[in-house]
Length: 262
Length: 274
Image (cartoon, rainbow over all chains, first blue to last red):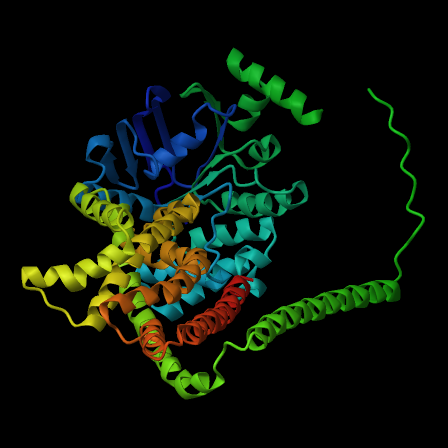
């Protein structure tokens, strides 16, 4: 399936982000190759979510560059209203799907309409083609029978799975998940993680911000630990999660496991 | 750690037919409340009408002769309201985009419009458009002048309602659409506006009800609507009491009819997302 398995899909280059005078990202470099599942862990406020949002320019980086499947866009915070810059950002977003903590399904549309809206109006697919695509991905996340329901009729887990199908319908090069299970009741987390794990094993390129260490252990190819806007440690999950080298990683995991089991 | 008493199992369990009984009982209670409250209205209104008849100052002949003439003004009142609400809605959509614009010229224009209109009395605006503009060579017939004045005025208030409605759509909706690579305009048209409309419908309904009543103000420039007719014939026949009562009653009925449709629309909108 992967004719160039080591091709770099996402390249984050020296990204800084300030919110006012708060320095949230302090020069982050990251490469993600095709088919890789990268998990970002770290305490809240460490910059994980901001990094994700900088990759698809939901936050304009203050400095640095993002390269996504060959398209490179330099951060240009002062020109962010510029038409050409906007269009470049849109091209980046076409390549990067994003999942949110709060799902953000469109409440005035049915499940199917949620899935075909952007493929038809942004990718220019014909309606039949878009519906076929949506049905395929809805079947994949196990929600084909809900295609004509409105989101308000679905459980949180079903909503997040719908959001995954919606993102897949854009056939992005990388899927980014921002704490996709944090807003879910405990008994609904499993069904979402299950779908994500399946995607990871099928070779979907993904970057996931998560607090689910168990899931990271199972599905990650690489785990990154972030602290104060920097990537402090990274490596295979067994190493980072079980034998962390950096003291800050050790401390985080110790505290995290202590609170998680309490 | 504090010691809490052990929870005991509830001794009463609700059986299915018991639940049905409770439900029926509650429904009976609601129905009785409605009946009683309607009865209160009928008694109070009956007493008012009775008192008016009893003091023997009401002329039934005037009412039967001139009532239809006054009532005939209701048509024009409705025309004014519909015309103004259409104009106001168009202005409000433009105004709301202006108020949310990052372009300083557009923003300045829209905010000046809102400030000017909300900062001066509607009556002054009506008189300005009909009596003052002719001095600048702009002469408008009374009906269009009245509709324009009301439409401009309500457009400013509704601008703020629309702006608030657009801003009330959760930010995540816009972000989700942007993350799907939708261009800005598409995000607005397909994702934000449809949700904003649902949010503002109750407030717009209230504006329309207020407008039905404020339309009486254009009688001042001689538009022969409800109030104008009542005043004209009442003064002429020295029967202002009867005439104004008829006009007031018609305004009241118009707003009740409109509220009824508004409620139904709101209920349908609420259901649509489910």
